[in-house]
Amino acid sequence: MKRLLACLLSIALLLPHLALAEDDAIPASFKFGADVSTVLSEENSGVVYRNCDGEPTDLFVLLKEAGWDTVRVRVWNDPFDEDGRGYGGGNCGVANPPMQGSRAFAHR
Image (tube, rainbow, N blue to C red; front, side, top):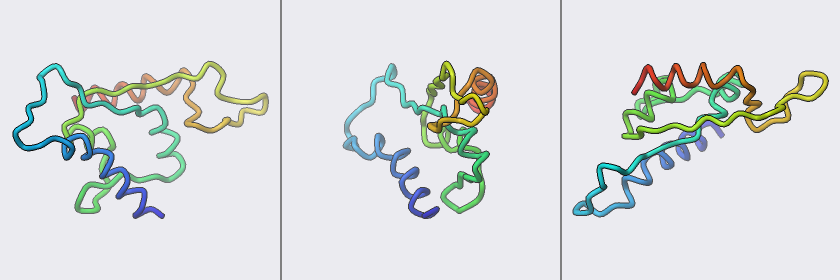
């Protein structure tokens, strides 16, 4: 399952680049971006992002190396129930974006 997820992530990162013919030019104004709202929840659940050599690598490093230059972080208004359990989908409360933003900014 982990290999499948790694393959899917690799394909997702490279697909925009592969879809273009060699002679197609990407306008300078074009942005490659990803929604990283769930990265903290994924990592807290044990997900490890790996580079092409299988070495653990920060997701933001992988995105930068793949040519991605924009990230989006969503914030859920009320991501937890009355017992403090997340509803899923990343559990992105107001505490998450500063951490994700700092990591993204460090690898810009």
